[in-house]
Length: 197
Image 1 (cartoon, rainbow, N blue to C red):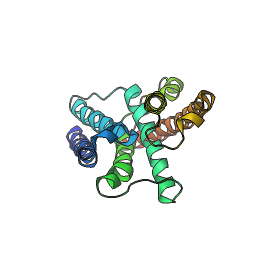
Image 2 (image 1 turned 120 degrees about the horizontal axis):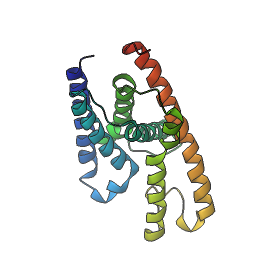
Image 3 (image 1 turned 135 degrees about the vertical axis):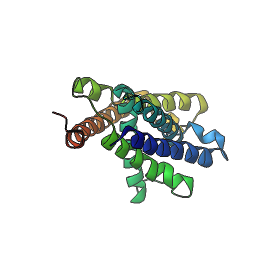
Image 4 (image 1 turned 90 degrees about the vertical axis):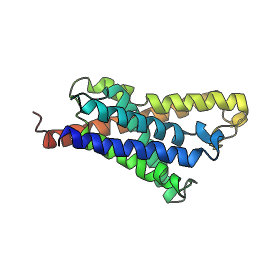
């Protein structure tokens, strides 16, 4: 695909992601600390920058992309749980885009338009959870300060440090798996689309 087309597609996706964050969260800015807001806004900026770099035959470094791709997989998984009624999510208005459309568009854009390099796969998989792990750590620290976590899934006083470490390890493993899956799918698709050897 021509770099101009990739740029336009990424431009549209990036603008959509940023605008839907603003529409969804400006009325209640105190919710901007939510993972949905931070990840969608960050991914919107990343994909815009990547589209601009594509015009110069460059791309955003993988270490940046892989962390946010893994984060979007986590958001998609939460969305799936919400769709089955196992977890409560807002699917109205802009939040339908933030929870469903945007993550899917970002993942598809990565799979179809990002050329993953074959080297250092293990290091990429190890690094993949950095966004989700950083947010979890941020939420845990913020919860200790405010007395409640961002999503309120657990009471701060009952979610001991040991549980937080175990949850962080579980999140790390799941997110690393998403990173590995993303790299695998991307390299397979890239070999077909870009005739890589």
